[in-house]
Length: 336
Ligand code: KG4
Ligand code: ZN
Image (tube, rainbow, N blue to C red; front, top):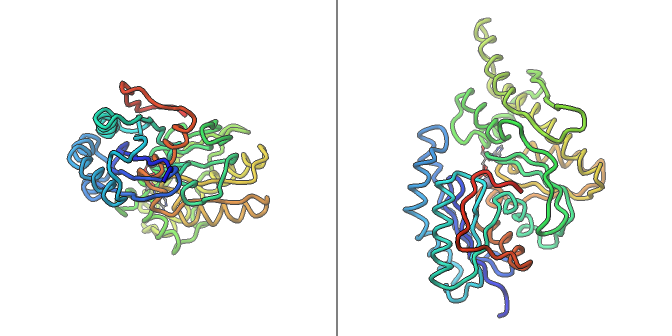
C-alpha cells in the first residue's frame, strides 16, 4: 500500500522487544518480553543474566512481532535497532539479530539511539505532535533535558551527574524495603504520605545549570531512617516516600519548565519509565498551565522500554538517509 514498513528490535536493558510499524507512527505490533521477574530476585538488573535471556528470546519475539502484524520479512522496508546506550552484552544480542536479518533478507539496517527512541514514543501516542519542543527523558538509566529541534536533531541541555532519577527511586525503595522496580511502588505509597513530613535537600547545583544530582538524596533518606530509629521512633514509610518524591520532583519540574520558558518552547514532552509517575505528571501539568505550555506524555506501555519507539526513531532516520553499515557496533555510552 506504499507505506514504509519498519521492523524494530530493542534489547538495551532487561526487555527483549520487537515491533512492526507503518510509516513510523502506526503500530501494527509491539511485543515486549520483560525479564523483571527474574531480576527481581537480585534486586536489580544483572547484566550477564539479561544477555542470556535476550539470546534465548529474541528470535521468538521477532517472529511474534511479524505474526501479530501479519507482515512477512519480505514486506519489511527497514530494520531499526538500538545500538546504544545500554548494557553492552544486552545491546549486542539485539544488534547481532538485526544485522543477521538485514543481511539475510537484504534490508537496510538503521541504528537508533535509545533516548531518541524514548522521545519518539510521543510521536506514536500523539499523532499531530511535531518538533520543536523541550523533552524530559527520565528513566532507570537516564535523566536528560533535551531540546528537540527536528525529528533527527536534538541538543542535550542537561543530565545527571551521578544517579538517574529512576535509579534514585529504585534505591530509596530498597532502603524502605519495598521491592523492585521501586518507582511504581514509591509512586503508589507516596499518595498516602505527607510530602512535607521530612525536608530533604533540593539539589539545584550551580545557578543556570540544567544538570541533576540524585545520589545525595538516597543517603539523606538512609540517614533519616537511621537517626529516627536511634531516637526510638519508627519512620512512616509513606511520609518518607512522599517527601523523597517531593524533593526530587521539585527540582526536575523547576528545571524542565524553566528550560522551556527560557528557550521559548510551548511544548514539553515526557519520556522514559519515570514519565509514568503520577505526581510528576500532576506537578508538571500545573506548572505548564501557568506558562501556557502544552504537556505531552505517552501511555505507560510506551514509557518503559519497547521496540515501537525504536521503530519510530528508525523511520525518521531512514527518511533522512540515515542507513547504518553492517559493521555497526554497540556503544554502551553513546551520546546524543
Ligand atoms: O525506561 P525504563 O523502562 O528503562 C530504562 O531505560 O532505564 O525505566 C525504568 C525505570 C525504573 O527505574 C522504574 O523504577 C522507573 O522507571 N519507573 C517509575 C515509575 N514507573 C517506572 N518511577 C517512578 N514512578 C513510576 N510510576
Ligand atoms: Zn529506556
